[in-house]
Length: 581
Image (tube, rainbow, N blue to C red; front, side, top):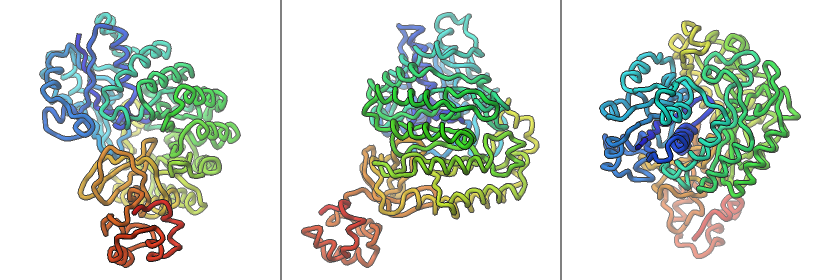
């Protein structure tokens, strides 16, 4: 039997599977197939493999592995089962990989003779970059193309289907006990991932469901409590065993991100705000480090600021554990969504503005010091959603003033993510969708997005990574229009624009020389002052155009002393160790 898994990439509230992230769904599906049918040949392809094969489009598939186009066609044509994994619920801006859709994959596989299965979060539809997208048309298309649309867990359906198709229930969910074998067997698929081994970061699941939703219901827009109606904590030993399997295969970058709140792992239910369990989290991350001692990235993702604000002592212990066992550049994303208390109440949001402020302050106190890779150890991020029911013109200003307060008080947030609300079937917002104000307030939303980017993001970014900071291990990922774009591997890494073409898929240490609204400009160090271009020399902190002209006139320099005598000895503090001859 030949089974083909096609990764269309996934992005949802509690999980990311867009390269360089390898999400949970392809791994679990691969493991389920392996357990059900030991004789099965399992092929992993990405949506980029299909784009390159059928359309000639270049993407991640043609960047790190060149697909054998005839082989891709043959694999699909001879497949007995084709599984498409996709779903985009919290869309972002992606550097080098574009998620697919049901409409796109339908063009490639509609005429295949294989049994076609749709899985992952795609069954709820996919969101565009903003506004409302009703998903009934997409689901109708899915049902016309796919033989089975899985509404439960794809891995559970695949295991049952391959054992006995009559027993397969597309609504069935698996247990964590059942998942144990799938996760370990499925680790092997990472070998077929285009970014393997150096650049892949693997998303690790620790919990599903929303602890806050179990107490007072979920946020109006969120799909997590719709799909998972109970909270399940994955056993520590199972998480550690999966990490070990991946680490033994060569994976060195991990994000413990597949849950709604890392601070609520193994927490005690307590209405709106669960009581955190620092002992369990310390055990989890100590266990991960014990089996992955030379891990290069160990980050997390979401956190509920209300938990941190209401349980500061326990949360500080957790934050210190994330620093002790993790790596610098770590970010916990806070779902504030709106600082307007009326909007927060109507949409049953996670935390108040005051709780979020206190959580930001606590994390800054514990995690703001700079780590060995150039980034602060542990910072919060802030998620904002525009267009929620209850919003007025005043709501946008309230949220802006909250963000300005963080800036004025000297606090740091790694990034501010602004999205327009997306309405999905089954969420409370689906029943309130007539009250969504994205179109009515379109100009106002654009105005405040621009205002936040210019007046908050830019000065905040200058605080987080000042000019002269060196970011280590920046992967050069894409070259476009005279610039090479790179980023570190981790949660919400900064995009660095390098003003020249350099070799891709290599790691560089980069000196920060300028700031944009959400990205930065940097140059690889050490800078060879005898060979570097005039354009790059001008960007070096403390040099500028006039001094660059002097440098060009005096080249070649025979010593660093000769160079600093020309530009000024006071520049040694910034440039010492960052230049070469």
